[in-house]
Length: 412
Image (cartoon, rainbow, N blue to C red; front, side, top):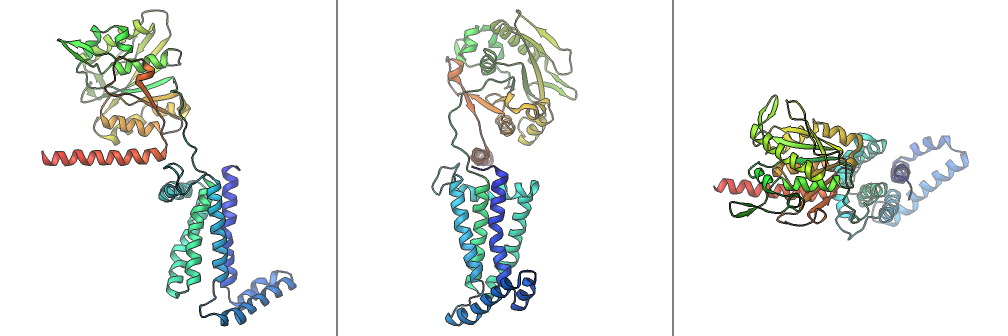
């Protein structure tokens, strides 16, 4: 299949056909004679004779107006060709959500038309066609009551969408991919309610996400998914930096300058000391607004720990902006495939904001299966690679979720 630029060129030339037919047919005979003066005399004469023949013979033979019949035929032919090209490009009438023409129609204005208008000549070309059709031709056709003109305009409008579907082939069906191991791991820390249980855990407990006995009751530890993810990306992997999202509500004593609460820092220090021994790795912890600290239990390689302050853990927009203003955004620009967002920890809005960043470029996302304990990291972690079609479903589900939460709050 040709490249996108070539497909746009083919679509543009195809979509010009009805417009040219409209111009030639709609011009008065005097205008036609004037317009064709630049053509060789024999050709111009022949075209004028054809126009006169249509006026003298076709129009009296039918009770319907014959104006715009040529335009209708041109639009119908272009519609059929563009529809066939859309199918050739992989779009299906009854396909799945990813390759359905219905989905393409629903996302055409927001994703393709507006997106192209901002960045390419093809988008400007589509804008001109839409403006002419919707503001001039279609209103005039309805006002005139000319069925050929109305039908031709509708076919032309649909042709634009199908021709664009050819320019943008349907996304290929996702195949199950291996869970990639990356250099950078982004993780949102949860509330530090049971982090002290790390002291009672073995390396195997942490690696397998086991529950830990707390006063005679087995309890999960919210830091263990972080260790599982670190273990996965470090063992036979390239992990070199952690970016931990810390919030004003749960972890920070102050925002300006950002500084961790003493008890939070002590618990994290305990965790990294344990992780250093278990993974045989050195940590270089860059405490916010404090001197960095080295934690080492052997000759292993070094993992740098960085902190990203979050101003409001319940405001998706603000969390998104805080991540965008951090080093994480630069890493995504440099090589997005080296970044993984772990979605298990933190608040639900933090997970949403991280997912919105994870769809950029080739960045990755993962999460730990809920209420699953004492399993290998490969069985606990689930890789998530999303695109714009998946994001529509995600946004819809999130909207419904927050509406339900709001309704519950109103009742309370």
